[in-house]
Image 1: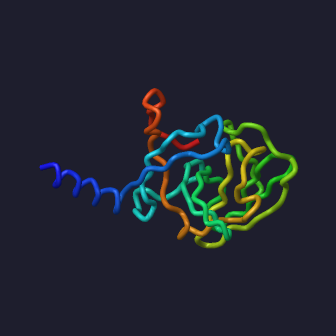
Image 2: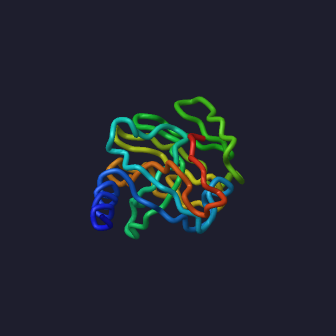
Length: 160
């Protein structure tokens, strides 16, 4: 029976989910260093990424590190950051989840047909799309659904 349970859990993990440990403070105050989240792969139509979702992805640079950030810009959107404020297609984005705006990283980016713009909630301590640009969908591992560690902070992760 134990072998069957292990096999079923392995199949579910391969096709649907994974666990990710948060490293660093770029997602404060929403996620803390050392916490773990349960993520569901985004290849399923019912789990497509939306603005405000938290996603785990492979950084599109030579380091190839896996990181976690919030989805800010969707495919085909123009993202402009000026004076710490984010504008999507010219409209100001309300962000009540951020900690510490970073005025030094102003710029403008256009997401292609399969690209997302991802930022950390702690903007002053985040290496994100402002540094490496929009992230191709193929590098996104999944959408964080549930904080699973530590037990005292278990809860679903809703869109920001």
